[in-house]
Image (cartoon, rainbow, N blue to C red; front, side, top):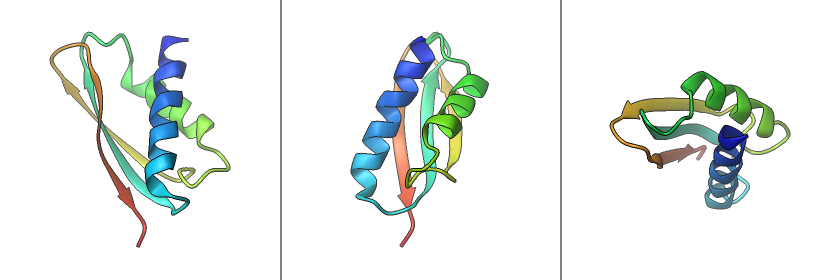
Length: 78
């Protein structure tokens, strides 16, 4: 459930920033102590983004020290 909430918050922010344009790449930095597994985040993001501007987004996840989950960048289609 923790991971679902994280993904929901990230997706909401991504869609707000994209202003309806198709999102190509989302880069996340995930703390090794965040209790969120990259595979689970990817799976949940793919399912949650269906039918949105982020549906075919490539999710790039980098593991970092700490507990944070950081939305590093978003690449939006021109």
